[in-house]
Amino acid sequence: MLYEREFLRSRIQKFVDDRNDIIAAWEGGSAAFGRADTFSDIDISLLTNGDVSVLQELFEHYVKQNLGIKYLYRIPMPTWHGGAQTFILCENCPPTLLIDITIFTPESKMLFLEPEIHGNSRFIKDTVRLSENTPHIDFNQQKSKIQNRYMSIRDSFELFCGFAEKELQRNKPIEAFAFYQAFILRPLIELLRMKYSPERFDFHSRLLYSDLPEEITVNLEELYFCGNKMHLQKNINEAIAWCRDEIKDFEAPKF
Image (cartoon, rainbow, N blue to C red; front, side, top):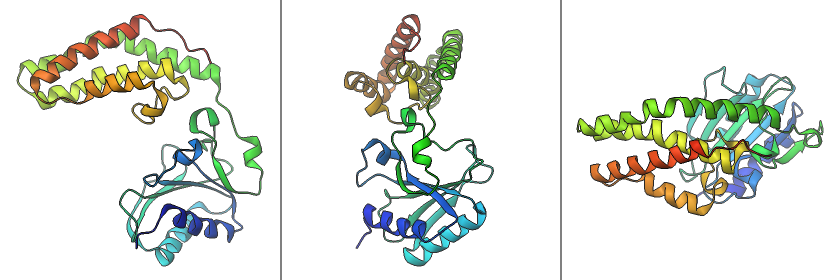
């Protein structure tokens, strides 16, 4: 029988409860937004006052002994966020159900707890009352980031949006599609996120369906899926026109 999500959570909870060097633990990801389902990974963060590498080894050993490990991948240190992160697929789990665990220390600068960006994390242990002092987004800093990124898109879009057309005319549709995604769809997505979800303007396609209006995602689906070269040509033209409109109509977000 395959393990279910709640069973894995209960096993992780036991590990957390039994260790004094874990001073806080919380579940993020879809659970923090109240949207966890059977396909959702278990995104667990641990805060330790002990040795990160030792705790990482102990957790992996615990999972191996109690659940079995089919695949395990550690992100090489140092990671971009500073935590020690491991992805685990257990032996009796469907391939859609991973454990994604990250271990932080009190000195870590990024804990991904800002509710405006990451939702309301579900604490499963909190001996240091971290849940009562979660950080919040710096809206002035976010506005500055958005303004800088907007100016970068505005100033570079017309230089690079023709790359897809060029490769299509060369009869290289694979390269054309790659340029289409990189230089047309990507900035379009960013501009739309600046308008509708400025807190997560740099999340690209992640959480797109919950952050953008349905009519927008329906139109984006039409642009993302191309059946042939003629369809790609049509989508390139439409996406460029849409992106130009968003550049022209851009307004700084009002948080």
